[in-house]
Length: 168
Image 1 (cartoon, one colour):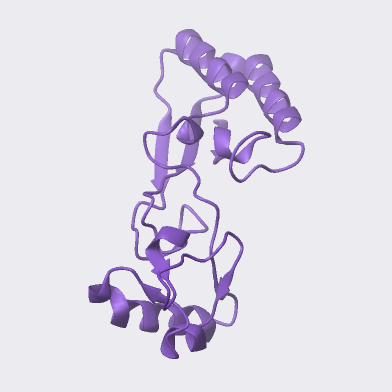
Image 2: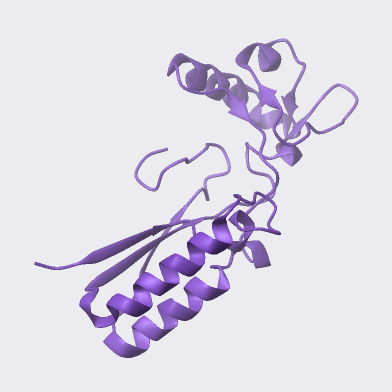
């Protein structure tokens, strides 16, 4: 039997001091690093998902504007009706029809309306990096096992949310 470890978005922006910090994430990161260090070579494979965005992602304020050219604040909810009525529109007019159909599709699924998130995990930014204690443990695992880590990027499509590494 083989043992695999899956780490979901262990990035700086989701830890204390990051733009979308989760309370207690530093302590969680230290526990995760401890597990990697303790199990070492008995872990056969490590998979790490990385939330990966551009500033103009559909769920970031910079994508949207109102009639005065203002962007929505983080944690604003944009409904399909808001887009249809023109309360919010994409800054790029060529994306207007996509914005309408996308927000309608989110709501039709019965689970979501579009939430505007603080900019986070911007590719190339410090917040996109793996949290330090986990990164150090991963480096040590590579050194011990001589194996590669499999990284799964999610969120690069600026026109859709991607809450999971397995589906949009």
